[in-house]
Image 1: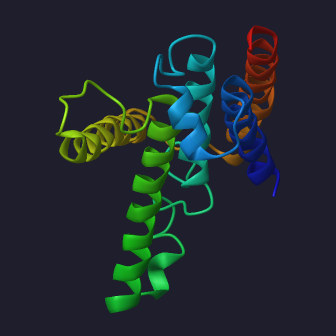
Image 2 (image 1 turned 180 degrees about the vertical axis):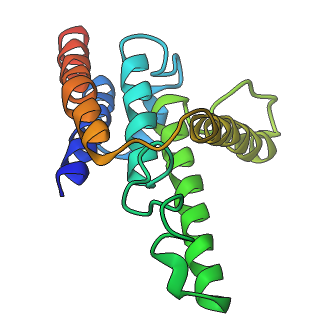
Length: 178
């Protein structure tokens, strides 16, 4: 429970910073507000970094995979599953990963917005969105491969001592600038 609170609060504060910057609570409004400039440019870069770290913890991926702890036991809590159930559980993890990548793309990278050729918006918008989502997905995968699993006390300490104060600072900075 302590770990859950330690990453949920920074995640929500980074999203709240986006809402304050754009003046909208809808994803469509946030994307529309980024037509001139993506939110990753400016004070929300810190919010993007916090979002990526908190997303790793939300997805229980390395270095925050303490609840699963695949390295400690054969396959974590998935040891008891096989066949279709295991496949669906693994598919669910992959869908969650792509969902958070798409959310980061919409909140910080302008969603499907990009250079437009008149008449080809129907083709370019999905391509831009998928390309940006794959870049975020690559970033999340790099974080997983670069770091080792933290112990629960290390993870909670890192999240409470560094990430939470940074997220509060980022939110206040965005509030002052916006």
